[in-house]
Length: 75
Image 1 (cartoon, rainbow, N blue to C red):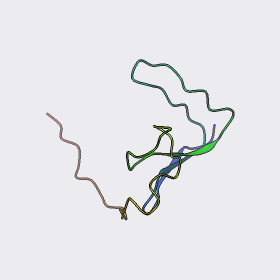
Image 2 (image 1 turned 60 degrees about the vertical axis):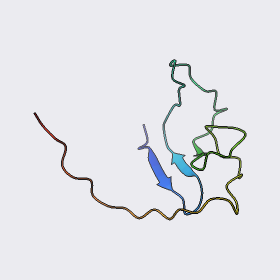
Image 3 (image 1 turned 90 degrees about the vertical axis):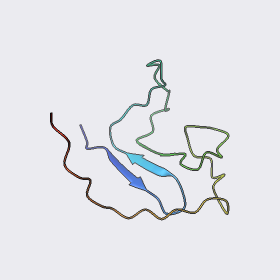
């Protein structure tokens, strides 16, 4: 099984690559047609949510830079 990788694209989608499945809130699996890479909408404008259809072009700006989260809280 390959490692799953998510890339937060500049001014665009979240690219997911590797071995993954995507489910809705009820646990139903999306049919991905054998894809091992695709884009997930991050702007909210896609007509094909949760998948990116390119609607973000010229309407969405966000450049994400990696950072470290604080340690998880343990009680």
